[in-house]
Image (cartoon, rainbow, N blue to C red):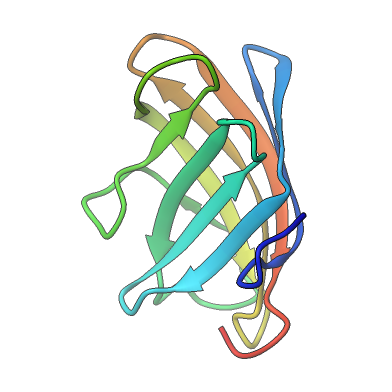
Length: 127
C-alpha cells in the first residue's frame, strides 16, 4: 500500500541484471534547489538520488552524481546500511509543469555492483 505522500507511477530496478525493486512507495519531491527521487518496495530495498531543480522542462538531461541535497545510494534487504553510488548517471525528463518525471538510472556502486532501472513518476498536485 502506498503512503499518502507517494507519487503516482512506477520505479523498477535491477542489480546486475536481477530484479530487486518494484516500488510500492515512490516520491518526486521538490526540495528547493533539488528534486529528490525515492523508491521503496516495503521490504528493505530502495533507490534514492537527487537532480538539480533548474533543469529545463521537456528536454532529457543526463545527470551524474553531484554534491547536492541527497547522496545517491541504494539499499538492499538483508544487507546492513546503504550502498553509495560511485559513478553512473540518471537520465531524466521533466514535463512542462515539473509534476512528472520519466527516465532511467545506471549506477555503479562502490562494491562494483551495477544498478539499472526505469521510472515514471507523477505528483497529483503541484510539485
